[in-house]
Amino acid sequence: MQHAVSISAPKEMRRTERIADLVLTEVAYPPGFRIPWHSHELAAFALTLRGSTTEAFAGLRFDNTESGMVVRPAGENHWDAMGEKGAKCFLIELPNSWSSDLPQFSAVMRRPFLHPAGVVTRLAQRTYREWLQNDTASKIGVQALALEIAAHLIREAIPAGGRPGPYAPVWLKRVRQRLDDGYAETPSLAELAAIGGVHPTHLARHFRQHYGSSVGEYLRQRRVDAASQMLTATDTPLTDIALATGFAHHAHFTTIFKRLTGLTPSEFRRMRRAH
Image (cartoon, rainbow, N blue to C red; front, side):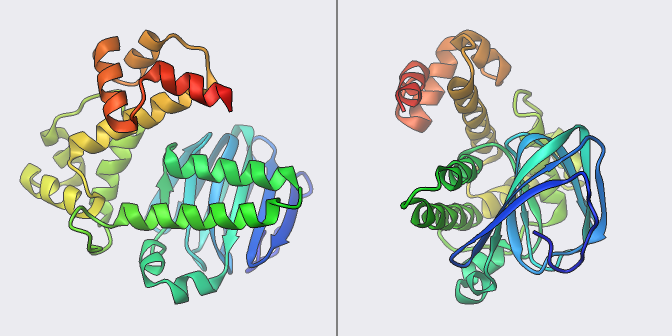
């Protein structure tokens, strides 16, 4: 839902509903559709349900694919372009009171960033499905899930010591984006440091300070998140999932997956299919 500007989009299909202090929007865009520079009055979580989008802010550009989510602060000028297959998106617009009443959330929302497929984006997908249920419990379910997304984002911004550090610099976000985009690969610390334009020691220290884990721990979790999505959404054999997500072999995949989730990949798949 657009607030600061009015954009004519005759081929755009949109459905919007206000639930308590949230504004939920489902919107489908045709291939190649573009929205020029504009801004929104409300901050938002913008989940790509299908297709791909590009969202560009001053100094930042996010090429978002299915299941990725852009966290967008209020009032940030940006432009959007849809991929060659178009896009279907789900937006959760947030009340200004969240930032004013919750200083930790305000810190998270200082600048836009792209959240890759994982726990947070699965919560956003659940919020979308809850909205579609449209029964007597949907409204409270949607509100609870949106708050849960906010809580996860706050926790991610708090390093291992438990105190929020300063906002991650742009060079460090480039490094994390490289890990998110190429989680099946294993770049060296020197390669990642070159992307950030810093010394490897500087990278290692600041990565843990801002993201609460080492580079290796983050990459391992990213691989497990990707594998979890494949286990849920496909019938791909476990060995193929292991290799596609960067694990050395089936046994290595099973060991790491169980360490981080408490379940083996087979147990995880059965549990998700049961629901």
